[in-house]
Image 1 (cartoon, rainbow, N blue to C red):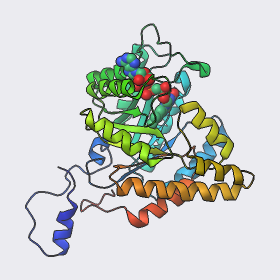
Image 2: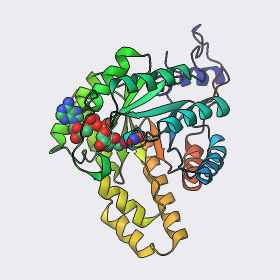
Image 3: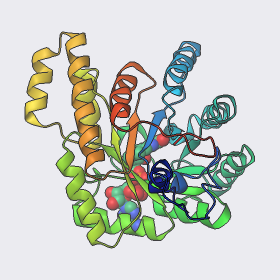
Image 4: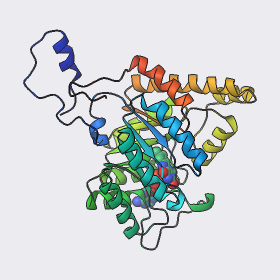
Length: 329
Ligand code: FAD
């Protein structure tokens, strides 16, 4: 039963309410598909496992600072070729248990045999983790060709099917409003996206983008193909010009000329770049939500100030709501 906000309004207005119980399922341990059907925007943060103690100290601070914003969930990436597998699982477990935040594990097919994937999924399940983002992973060493493990999978859709068949996780996948870099056409990429959803993917999170029209056009094309799952836009606040140019070159996203010109003009002034990045992302997020996006997934790069300022501003328009069961949405 999706959370019914008009019911709260009826209550406030003294209108007789139906006898249905309110949110019997609303609790920590909610699957992302349930969070997405609550009728509230879903805000999530993406972190990566730090490489050293200093990085962990910074992430602890970031978590403490973002915790009070009541994210719907937090995700932790899977390092290239499974390089962070231990840290990813430990970090997720810590965030879930110590901070009481819903979590999502990223998992890739890169360099992994089915048995290893099965073991990782088993460990995640044992740790009480309910949500997995099933990905293919990038070709190692920045190469263009992905080589599957001899006993592994070639496409994210294979991992989605494997995870859905053997486990109870809520499974999501990645999508690309400006096309995946390896796909020769958007049509082909969308055809493959449909395979992923048909394999059991229940929601999608997009690659970063800076032109909202690309997201809206993409969603329209996806819907025209009969794909109905929620598509959460992925937003990366710009904090550093060289870094964002590098990222966009790698993932095939584009920066609108007007924004890029302004960023280049300001690039030696760190504070000015930060202010522009925060203002731009805030405007981007508000338009996305106003035009129907189901939430925002923030690529935080393990830092809190920009994401915090943006989400604080968004929450003046979309405040978190306390459910009658006492949980925050
Ligand atoms: P797929 O869905 O398999 O698609 C990859 C390419 O193969 C596309 O061009 C697609 O069109 C094509 N394709 C798909 N299925 C078929 C098929 N059946 N037949 C032929 N072609 C097909 N990487 C990490 O290493 N760790 C992470 O934690 C991580 N997190 C991410 C989170 C998000 C939200 C996003 C958007 C990306 C993330 N990535 C991560 C990067 C991701 O692994 C790369 O973008 C990778 O190149 C593709 O992954 P995918 O899951 O989209 O692959």
